[in-house]
Length: 543
Image (tube, rainbow, N blue to C red; front, side, top):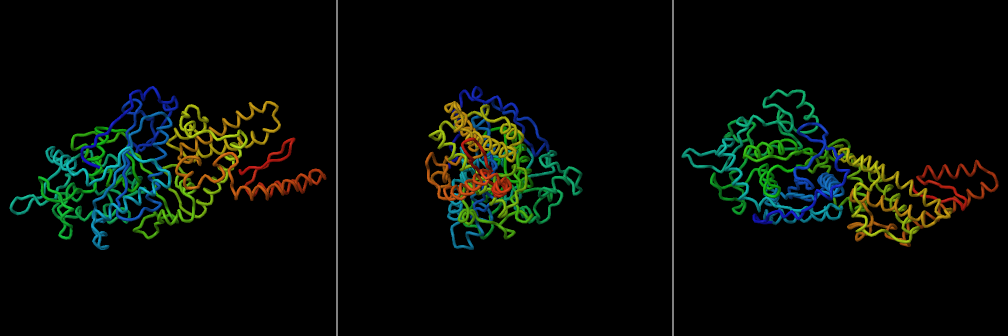
């Protein structure tokens, strides 16, 4: 990524393609603490900046949850017909990267690139769409230096100088000069918290509790005695003696490197220009990163994001998952035991603002969901003699999807409600399948099954979960859903076992031993298998 790349927007008639359903979209805004109607800044277009990884080490499930959450947000905008410009940065220069590279005997840029590739692979395996642009911090030093100069010129930052009046390389944002500081997280510029800040404190780090937070350690540069105010934060940092020479950049205010927060301000402005629609990230970035980012962007004279959205944490036994706490689960380790589809489903199984408890039960429920989805898609494809093409599935507008699914997605991306709508459609589809042989108008009946199949797959696709899409097909995650007549050893074995039970139940009913017949049905039901009785016999499906 270079400093010369400019975003190209090919949308010339985007407003005409937007679905009617888009008018009902409501999203939460961290700054207002309220759910409100979404109106794009530019008709037919949506600009999203999502904070990406600091590539210091391997990705874990906690990292990827945010990526999956905002991938679903993006996919819903695309299903609504918007032209989406999605920017996700890479922080490839950072104290942790420098320190860990030195400890491992690596070049810092070598380490950053190794783990950047690991993150890219994890995103790909879990079906996260590539961003429109993925800028690296190190490719945007000129942008950062120019932005810092504007903040200084506007009187909202100061350069630290030595005894001879020479710049030291340290530049700090002057919080006292910016009366709007704290507006994102509703916190006052005092040591005393108010009711609003107490609410946000319960969800993450706080400006009023600036101690050594275990989730968001203080940047050493922000502990400098050269600061005018304890709340001030680094825009540019003088190099440490241990920093390699190629991790230093020349600037009018001294040789050094950027503070963490300025990186995103520079890159979001570069690729999305002035005010853009949504700035996203994990909840732990709410403060100080995003509070500082909003302040410095506006202090430079630019508009900040129109809406700020934050995904909640993945927790393990109630504690936030992170490497620093020793309970991180690496993506490769999880994928070694579970299919990527199942892991993605588990990561996206609750609404993005809800904490996600990671456990064996979470993964077991995701596996059960896959079995039900694959079973229906396989059986429906066999019944209609084909699987609808990916092109057909992707072309389905939000206006053509079931109303309960649309309502859930428009309700601040309520994926729990959306998933419920999918399984309601699957149950209805299974009922249609069970009655298919009895319908005199078989062509009409097949058309109804096909419509149900298209709807289910399009809804799944909106969540990044159509089993017949990439990467699931290439990775073998589609299983028996791959097409009419596709082999599935697990499904065949289950079908044989259930069919034996249904045959025994049929014999019991024939002998009028209804107690036995009901016992078999109830036992199958308790195992998650639904039975549909018809004139031609009984059929089964996963609930």
